Length: 319
Image (spheres, rainbow, N blue to C red):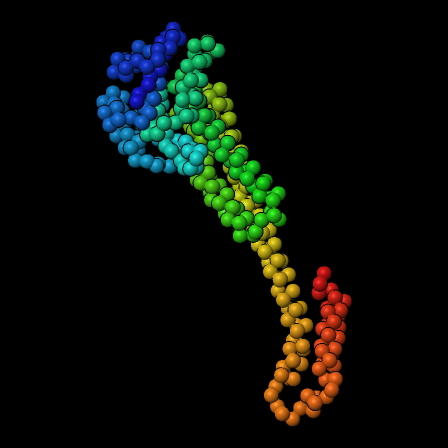
């Protein structure tokens, strides 16, 4: 599907005109959005806009790393949208010229719809929209980056919950959840860090900016990406701390169990020795004929066990 937005020199906006009927030189600027395009629609990138073959090839070979390329008077940007359910990156390509913006994406993107509606609304309401293709491209990038935040905020809430309920679940379950969160942070990092590097290049590019106002807009996106990167690194450190805490907690529990078993084993070792001696089948054992031998041995075993328990308690083995 291709939808078009054409702004006349008088500021009037025309929506969804057939692309082949639009003569770009007759308009102030146009925006053509290729959403889930068919092969026939994709061919218009070449037959109508005459974009460089390498740029068109990059559009068709997903998933490219975010980048900025220059082709004569056209700037080609590869951006990444974020699938909020799978946290996988989805490619969005922009062609920015002096009088046009072309967006190309193989999946339907909510961010593009929001940017489209925002620009149309501001032009209709005459809210001082004096931008062109560059500020329209900024609006698209801004919406893409804004949609990174909810997923990261959700992960931070999960980390806070994990930290609060750490003593109520088994270490195995907690470790599984921590590594799951860490894996999702890694997915976000693979999307956000390349976008940050791209925005740094855009911010310092003389091709895509013409004044300080546009630089300020793109600088705002770059600041958001820096904040996202810092949040991801802080969350990754938090998962490392939680992992180390759970490992220490598990080791402490194992030490406690081993200490308890050691105490029990140590107490029963002399008792087992006594029982073993008098359990032997030798016929000549003087104590076997003693009238009070059985109760005497039991008494010795009880006193020995009690004495060892008291001695261990005095040494602090039960604390």
